[in-house]
Image 1 (cartoon, one colour):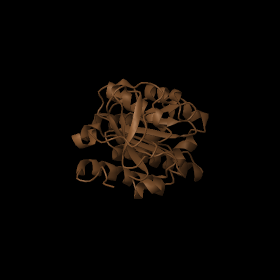
Image 2 (tube, rainbow, N blue to C red; image 1 turned 90 degrees about the vertical axis):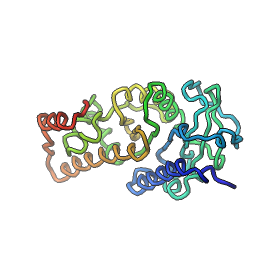
Image 3 (cartoon, one colour; image 1 turned 180 degrees about the vertical axis):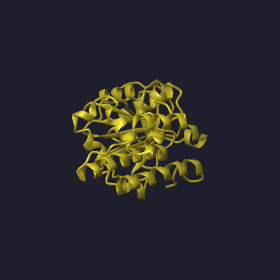
Image 4 (cartoon, rainbow, N blue to C red; image 1 turned 120 degrees about the vertical axis):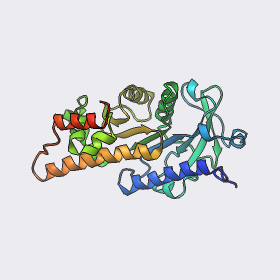
Length: 269
């Protein structure tokens, strides 16, 4: 069977990047069993050959219409598929889906009829929101960083922007590379539209959102950038937790030092 990636170098590069990130997630211990999800909006690199591809699945309802997704194309990690397998065989553990012209259904077109992630409702709702606001963001990453999830078990860190300012203060790179900080979503049922709606509301202010006691969602222009933000935040969490394990509370950079960094690099927030 001919792969959709053949003779499509730009699409192949994007899928390669997804596979590379999937490997990082597994190596870091952020993707136990089938944990975590990745979706990428590939609509901007679709050609006539892909448009004319027949579906290899039935039309599957999205749960609600998403008008901004009409006729769109997405690569999605498969449900019950492991990140370590996605890293090795991305087109056997993920699939390309097409949103129907009514914006209410999707169908799988390549390479195999691998049903998308169980968090598809959240992912596509976020993509629908991003397109609607004219965002250039096309990649969504959901993963389970041990250190960051652990911190959401402390009610103190669930207060608005408490975790943001703590993580910013651990290392200057965090303030520079995650300038919008971290939004916090109180626990919601996984895979629900309620969780999707809460995430969308938080994305009005943040690029990275913590789902309490669950994981992280990051959005960016590409999957590498989405991963890098989470990786940077995780490093800050590790610095904080390492200092605590050594028996002291880290001082962190001061407000004045963070403001100096903000002004020097013209950062938001």
